[in-house]
Image (tube, rainbow, N blue to C red; front, side, top):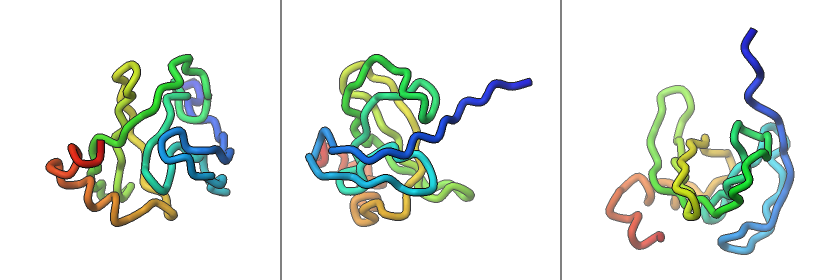
Length: 109
């Protein structure tokens, strides 16, 4: 039997990048700020909060997936780890679209 790798952990937080208050999603684990799209390196498996790194994770790419919609790739500024996270319904769509163009990534960093 395969071990469960997703733990629902839907808490609000203050974004470590832009400082805005982020409310819980209410339907899944909140894993990034909807205003600036930054995340924090807290998980080894989604929702487990088992990573000791704690570094900020910069959105480094956005791709479109047929079933999942937009997928944001985050890269940890502290340790270099990368994680993919689905777009959420309250994400800043104009920022997501800007990040699909690799030439815009430099201005965002």
